[in-house]
Length: 115
Image 1: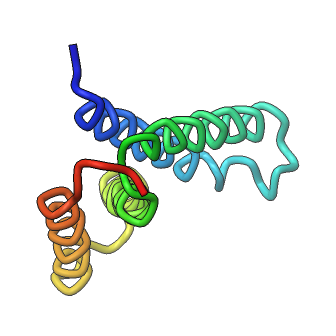
Image 2: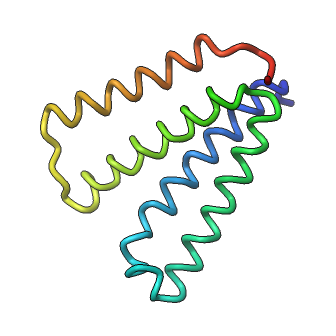
Image 3: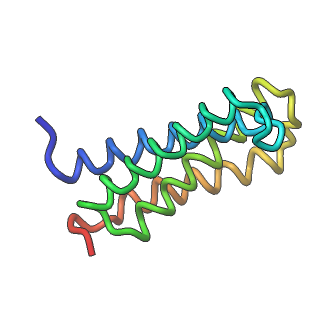
C-alpha cells in the first residue's frame, strides 16, 4: 500500500491536521475551565502526538517536528483568518508563505531513513 516513507509523511500530515484541530478549540476551553471543549482539545493533542510518533519511525525527528509545527502554525493561522476574522496583511501572508516554503524544502531534502 504505502512505502514506509510515504506512510511516515501521511502520519505527519494527519498529525499536523490534528494540531490545527486542537489549536482551533483552545479559545473555547476558556482556560480549560469548560469540560467538553477541554476534552476535545485533549483528545486531538493525544492524536496529534501519537501520529507524530508514528511518523518518526521513518522520518528524522528534526524534519518531522519542524514540518508538524509548520503545518499546525500555517493551518491555525489560515483558520484564524478565514473563521475568526484575524487580519490578513500582506506581510503576514508572506511570512506564512515562507513557512510553507520551508516545509516543502524539508520534504524535498528529507533523507529516507530515520535517525
